View 1: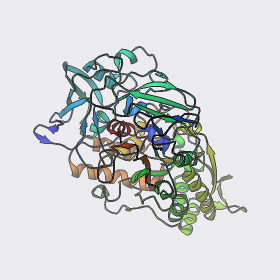
View 2 (view 1 turned 45 degrees about the horizontal axis):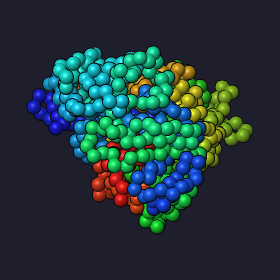
View 3 (view 1 turned 120 degrees about the vertical axis):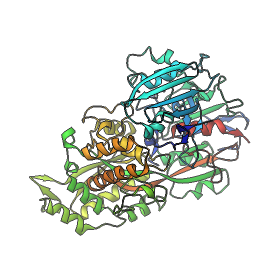
View 4 (view 1 turned 180 degrees about the vertical axis):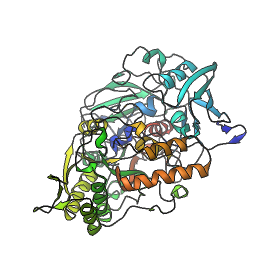
Amino acid sequence: MFRMSRGKRVVPAMVLAASLTLLAACGTDTDKGEEKPGADGTTSEAPKEGRPLVVWAGSQTPIVANFNPYSPTVLHAALGSIYQSLFFYNKAAAGDPVPMLGESAEWAEDGKSLTIKIRQGVKWNDGTDFTVDDVIFSFTNDTAKADYVDSVEKIDDSTVKMNFNAVSFTNAYSILGATYMVPKHIFEKEADLVTFANATPVGTGPYKVQAVTDASYTIVANENYWEEGKPQVKEVQWIGVDANNSAESLFKAKQLDWATMFIAQPDTLTADGTLGYLAIHQNPTTLYTCSNAKLGCTGAQTDTAVRQALNLAIDRKTVNEKAFFNLSGDMSPTFAKPGRDDQWVAEGMPATSPQTADVAAATKILEDAGYTKGGDGIYEKDGKKVSMKLISVDGWSDYNAAAELIQAQAKEAGIEIKAETVTWDEFSDSRMTGNFELIVGGVVGTPIADPYQIYRDWFSGDYTQKVGTQLESGEWNMARYDNPVVNEAVKKAAATNDEATKKEAYAAIQKEIVNDLPYIPMFLSASQTFYNQVDFDGWPTQDNLYSFPPAWDGMSSGVVLANLTYK
């Protein structure tokens, strides 16, 4: 039984830590058993039951064998299918965290310690016992240790106690749901846990790696898995393709079983009944801006006035209609999820971002900030044009179309945007090192009705690095934003479980980020998931959202795979 208690009073678990793998596929953001798809697109005869489930999660070729959960280029199957957290938090539906490698967690009254009971009888896939020593190592190694953790001590063979240097109620999800347990006997031998490729991973999850090629990788059922009778699907093949439209073609050829990607007309895939379909508004789509000149950002977007003007120059209604086919939802510049998180939106804060362009207001902001329009219609100041490069990932058709529309809309307000596409590796490197001006990118939404984790991970100056320095594991502030007011308010929110105090802290954060716009809010993306419902059963459905359905979403995808069966 899971207990999130403070003394004898139940305390709701708060917050989310971001999953980088989701961002890898957010350019989204099946056969009947007669044929077995191969990594090269060929097929061979195979019985329906026992054939591999074929998955695309946004990976491009060539695939590189990297199953290190601390690596920014980790392959999707590593998270959830191979490595697991102590508890599972379901983004798709309200409910208590589900025990995984942990059985219970109990807070001290002062919020400065947390006692965790771990599941007994769990083994790593090499046959070694999973122990409290692995838990302690997973929380205290130099790469994973959070700044609020003082120590983790062994109480007995099934219990650890985490001690914090500050009240840490609000970090519950980071600790229990977003820290992957790794085997001490493997990882302690590595000098650098970030660059370690971990090509033959040892995990506790339902699957283990069988083979990796440039075109695909295959995972097979872990015979030592602790959940009795799972997984039923014994083999899963993760393939690399170049773009959404290639995956769409594979679905039509019945050579793909599961993917989460943007499709303008989903009924073209679902009409014959082979594929099921779920669309859930969950994660914000934004324009990342490298916003902080003090940390090395360069370009016109480092000026708050330019970001404010660009925000007003965008016609979101048109972008949603033409690039996302009206499948995206409105989002709030406070980054609280409309509807679900309304209680946290401070008085006077906008419920949603402006849906139509206001060119007059945009140009006024620029002119009030000392910009003048040049002969080419583009504003400039001190001899420098308001000109910025906006990148998106090649093959992510919705994001690419959005970038081109924003380019045209910005020009009407005297702002030059140069939309360019890059490879996934270039995109990943740019946002992790800060070497960019603007990026069409996703922000990971929280799994519960509280925006704290977005505020801490994406807006706090404690979670970023200077431009040119790679963000460390657990750091997600790609905008290099560092505002003392926000930093202090994040710490204030982390140190309390009192709703009124948190609202006060969130009001301070919202006032700053709505003005500063280090991430220019666009939409709540509709994650469109397609799945083979003829050959496989047990998928999340609208009536049973036991897990967030995207194939790329860490623990969520591992939970889905563990619950699938053959029909």
